Image 1 (cartoon, rainbow, N blue to C red):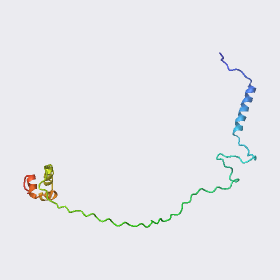
Image 2 (image 1 turned 180 degrees about the vertical axis):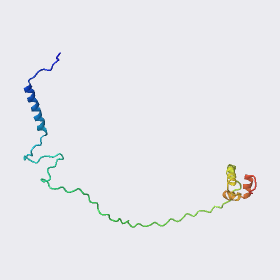
Image 3 (image 1 turned 135 degrees about the vertical axis):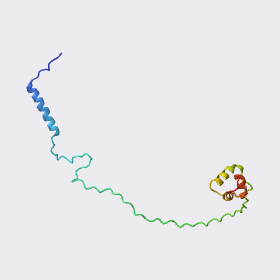
Image 4 (image 1 turned 90 degrees about the vertical axis):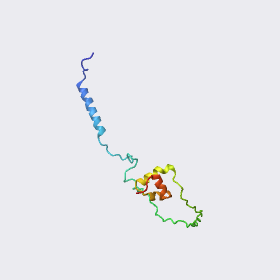
Length: 135
C-alpha cells in the first residue's frame, strides 16, 4: 500500500503546469481575421458588405372589391293554402284529469269566469268542479 505520492522532479511539474496554462490561454485568445475567403457565420449568411440588402417579405393584400350579387329573380310568393274554417264547439265538460288544475287556478288568483274562458265552458261547470260559487 502506498502512503506517499510518488516523487517527481519539481522542474518537470512546473513545465507541465506552464504548458497547460499556455494552452488554455490560446484557446480563449481572439483570433486575427483571415483573408482566405468569406467566413461563414452561424446563420449561414456572409457579411452585410458582400451581399446586397434583402428585401423585406411583405405580402400585399389585394384591394377589396365590392361583390355585386347576381341579379336573381325573386320567386313569386306561394299562394296560401285555403283551409276550412273549423267551428269551435265549446266542450261539454272538462275532463276529470284537469279538475285539480281548475281548482288551483280558481283558488290562486283567477276568477271562475276567467277559468271558464280558458277551458271554453260555462261558469256553472267551473262552479260545479270548485264546489262553491265565486264570492
